Amino acid sequence: MALACSVFLLSGTASAQPPLSQAVPEVDLPVPTHKQAELSQDMIEQAPPIEAVPGIDERLPYEELRRFAAVFAAVKNRYVEPVDTAQLVDAAIHGMLDDLDPHSSYLNEEAFSSLQEATEGAFGGLGIEINQTADKEIEIISPIEDSPAARAGIMPGDVIVKVNGEELSSLPLSEVVKQLRGDPGSTIELTVRRGEEEIDFSMERDLIKVQSVRSKMLDNDIGYVRISQFQERTVEELVKSLNEFATTPKALVLDLRNDPGGLLNAAVGVTGAFIEPDQLVVYTKSRGEVNLRYRVVPSDYSLSHSDPLKDLPSWSREIPMVVLINVGSASASEIVAGALQDYERATIMGNRSFGKGSVQVVLDLGDDTGVKLTIARYYTPKDRSIQATGIEPDIVVTDTEHGDFFSSRREADLSDHLISDGEELFEGHPEVEITTEEGAAEEAATDEELEGATEDEVAESADSTEEPKVEMYTFGEEDDYQLQQAVEFLNGEYLNKDE
Image (cartoon, rainbow, N blue to C red; front, top):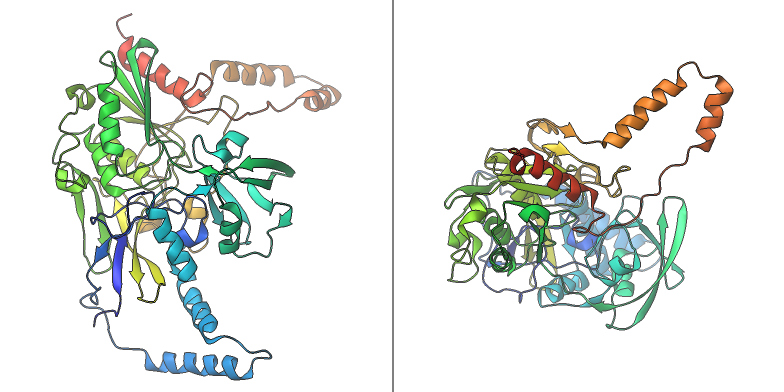
């Protein structure tokens, strides 16, 4: 039995091409479209109507539907105040999908229109990804680089409590989206809660466009490439950046931190820039054993008839690499990191990634509404599930010298998240944790000082100890501690061995 609707296949977000254009699945941001605001850029793919999965019971549950009809009639006819029929049906569909997983949802006319609008191009806003928590709080997942929010100092984990002085505690997310978006140049006042403190920000909305790839040469001829999001032209931009290095790098740092994902074909192409052609990058498993495999071949990473990797410099598949990830690295970022880790092509450094490893489709119901439904899980070439586990780095490095800076939740922290196969979350790769020599020396000295100290001396020492202030930093700059550690690792492991 076929569903009476058309289907748009997606595995996520982050595209800026027209809707219903050339078919390509993509990768999602850490949170579902209906539960995020500013960067709700879902790429959708037109496909024939979905047929029922073979072997699955297609019979309608008449007894359960009769019970539903009885409740519907009771509410419609007996509730203390009149209730709109469409509102009741929408609420019922919402309830049916919301209990599945965080990425399955009902898209009413407004949400469905917003999804299509986002695929058509840039929009006026602040440049933030937000999630509605189980407590109905609006939590910021990540600000986009060089967006109004990032320039103002908005941080991952901040909770929006007021917009233009109005409390958000009772507003649905769709209303929050309306308030956050607006004409470029218009001003908005935002109040966020950071820990126990409330901070006010005044920002000017801007046209939100994401620079996908940027690069530079570091000391000792170490190349640095940052991908902030996987977009339609990311592979072309990556190849261009690699070719623009004035000298051939001796090693490379690929920075995927706070990269929330994007197009799947872009993730395959980016991976293909560093591993050999034809190799498997990622595959999916679904309920009906309908598995898709994505390899380093042009048909799997190019939206056009051209091959964006044809001008790739030969050294990109040869020089030593480090890939940086953190809690904000999700979906497409995790696919790239997982594949490079499986093939031992790169050393993964940083913190465990977000853990968004599921595939969604958007069903167009034909009345300007839709359903977003999780249909499969992603797996790395060595059969590791990304879902709820994320990618565990080979070498764990804190965000800053004084500890972790980003505190946003992971997929496994979301209510009703889809579990990983086997629930074995952190197995497969040994962890090495980096601490500074200064920190180790201080810890040893403190232990020695405490031996034989009086209780009053210990108390006085504790009172006088102040936690170091951890400040926001820019990825790729001199104060980027994780990048410093990556460079130090490459120098020590590969480049300075003969010195």
